[in-house]
Length: 297
Image (cartoon, rainbow, N blue to C red; front, side, top):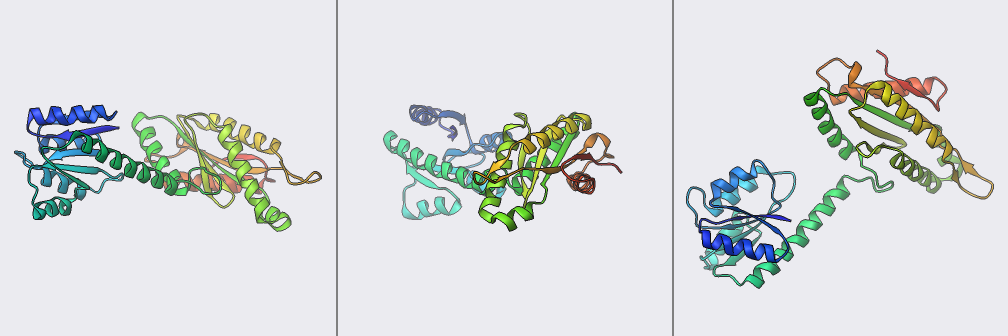
């Protein structure tokens, strides 16, 4: 893990960085709170070790700025200081510090505190992943797909490259639930998720959009390429039967709608692309299902 260490004392900064490195982490130094704050505008550090008394911007002021920034991922902060009265400790923690060590500190204790921070940050990362994951299929959920689509659309606009979407909807899925029960329906969804994941490109994103719908995000892909990819997915799904019993198997037929920024008036919006993909899927459903259709105005 890359750790930002902040101290106006060159000697103290070297000591802290040495301890951080001895614990197996990468140490990056800043000579005061303002320098650290400027660095944080360019790169996020999950863990910061900062001195309290510094010129320009002290440790408490730096902590308060970080907490006010309300970044998406959490920043764990250890405050180092020679001020060790109970009121000062409380002031540091109230400012937003997660942990507190009094100088001169025991290097072994700092290593132990880093271990605690690592466990907490790893837990936070796991919880964040769970919040972005569909529990049944293990794919990205709607929230994660929307965030990924936002980033992909921004990149496509910036680089003037095409971006395509494929919306996959299982045909007659309600009949599966009605005839075989929801546990079998869940197995069908899991099999579809597995098949889509195995047959996408490494830089594509596939997730569960909702119910029996799956969304595939295809960066740097024009409409013709997206249609080829969608047809490949449709054929692969149709060939991937789910065996329920020795005598019963379910064919995974699906209808797919495709759209691309290539034929969408600029400026592109997520809502426009999603509406177009949904309209294309509706056309596929109306054309007998188990087929691929591109959006047409």
